[in-house]
Length: 246
Image 1 (cartoon, rainbow, N blue to C red):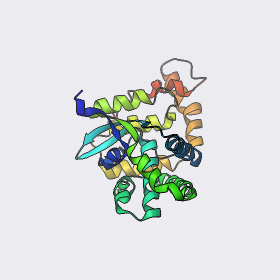
Image 2 (image 1 turned 90 degrees about the horizontal axis):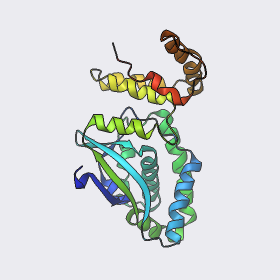
Image 3 (image 1 turned 30 degrees about the vertical axis):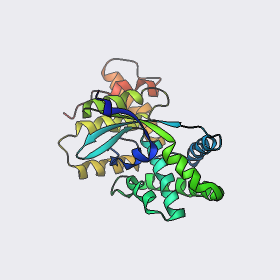
């Protein structure tokens, strides 16, 4: 890996990257509670004068002059929302420029947009509460908060990283992972076709999809292989890997 593909950078530099969200990513789903925790963690580091507060890592893949967020999308979107709050309160254009991910057309679906609006309202309130020290808090957030930037060399490598990261810790829901596998097989389909399918998938009731996997898809694919079709769980998502378009 080249040195420039692995570096620690301040948040303001991370937000200046021409970021995009690949279509295999899950929708933006951070709760207002999660956003508040992130804000309070940064504020606590600011109050305690911690010289550098490491927010986490982002894994990127360069594609057509953009950097797709392979891992860290939920957190980076939340930080972009926070930066947009800075802009709305202080009306300073430099903060709007750092929020460009939110302005990109077709980046977020309707459900994601709803979560973005809810988190914006909560984060804006947090900023207003500390209005007397907001400018110094903004300076700390953008300059003293840092992220580990990792740039992968190929789309295959990026997807493998996405897959492995979401197989550990708190994983994606099975239906989100399966959507990702299928989208990856749709190399010959147009973007509009993919977006149409993604929107249809996301607009389904997610609990119904979970039951459909547990009660229908998993037993069928297991029975077809003469295996036990009971006791489905997210740990058995590997059963659905390797499904080809043909």
